[in-house]
Image (tube, rainbow, N blue to C red; front, side):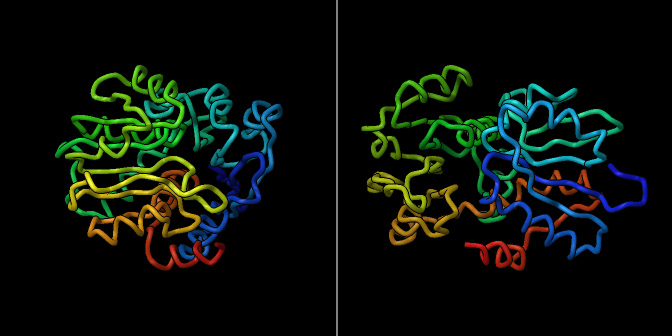
Length: 279
């Protein structure tokens, strides 16, 4: 962290980066808490990412959030990483401490915090979970649910090999199910999570029948553009509790802000409304 008396600088990097809502989140918090700091976007291509990360201490930058496609390169460039970064082999939050690059991954934290805030009392160990998709977000969510004691995590992906690879990497209780069996896999589950791009603006809708899903099961879609996806609308129509993807985005930002700027920020309706203003 910068102790020179100048404004603390942090930011987000990716390629491209214009789409990122992170500056809107962090600069809202900086203003709210009266902190002398700034959070800016950095467009960093993958071929320049390693050099950019190693230059952070010399540039007196407190740290960065990292988005696609640089999370794996960030992991390789760190001096130190925590168990989440090591488990996911990806870093989305860098903190510079006395010239040392420390990397973590806050995606699982963001997902679980959003779920807990939306559905107080919900527990992963109450029954099976179905996760659609097998990309980076799915990896973090599966890891978080595994840590929380989910007894059966069923992964369905359009490319079966990716679901199989994820299940093989994480081991019990993670297991793949065929994409064609995704609706049947909902039977008896306590949570359905869509981590795929299906239902996102500009993408085809997610085609899944919810008939086998218990009405008390939570339906969580990490897509947040649009905020109300067809999946969430269908879930609400049949009485299932539904959680949108904006909460995960907001909560995953909290640890980095705390470490860079020294204040634990709050996720509230004012922040949600502020970020929703960009959609």
